[in-house]
Length: 311
Image 1 (cartoon, rainbow, N blue to C red):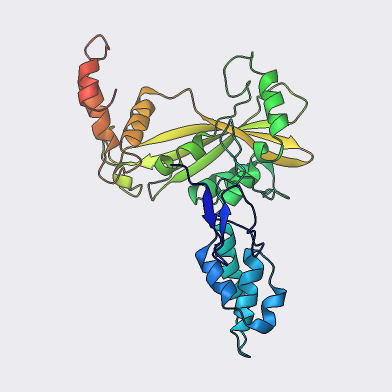
Image 2: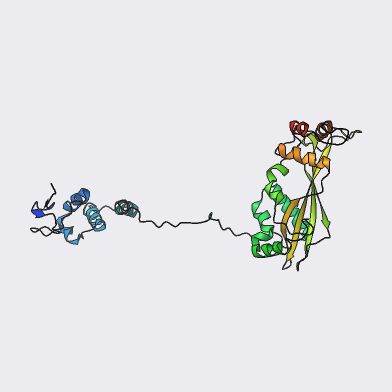
């Protein structure tokens, strides 16, 4: 049976369920009245009851004041208690926004090439990647400061022959593979400048960075007489593009060299297969394995190369 009567929680008078206030004491009829607040309200000292408003915050503050007895209660306790009681019953009040792409973290970087020549910027960029100095290598990249210009220049040369000396490249091969390329302890890096430039209104330069890797991660091994001496090594080459904007030089991008010999390709394959850990690896042995997979007509046996980890 539907309940049509309600009793006042203050004076006990019986009222209709549709009534908003008690017909005897005229206080609000609320069957969900908080028992704790009723208790606090009923135990407030008489000389302070006139200051009570019929809300959670007022009741709590007056109750605390009536029990201080001259003692100072810290503001943090009062604030925390009010915050817990007031906010805990509130549900679904937050604002939720639907997003269509991954949020990005905006971070400001300072240009790191002030006063440096184009070749010095290249050297500093390589060293920063090698030593994992993010604020430096990002502080030398064009896309950190001029992303719109970078996109514009890439569009201008997108129909040019796909060659690092004629096409702007947004790749950062050194940075993307830094955990492999810079893992060996004994690395020798040489840079060479090329005069061929992409067609644009800006001065641009292309440098070839050549990184030398040695068998067993030891470039101090004595050279042998044989082509397959254990002191054998290989060189990994990267083309780095530099652009001058407002008198400063920036790294546009870098891409893996496309003119590797067969031996260099073998060394690259081995280096990446080993994730840069070449302490127990001999490039000469890799060349021997490759040669064993090549027949008299210079055709490669794919299964043999796969088994040797060279394909």
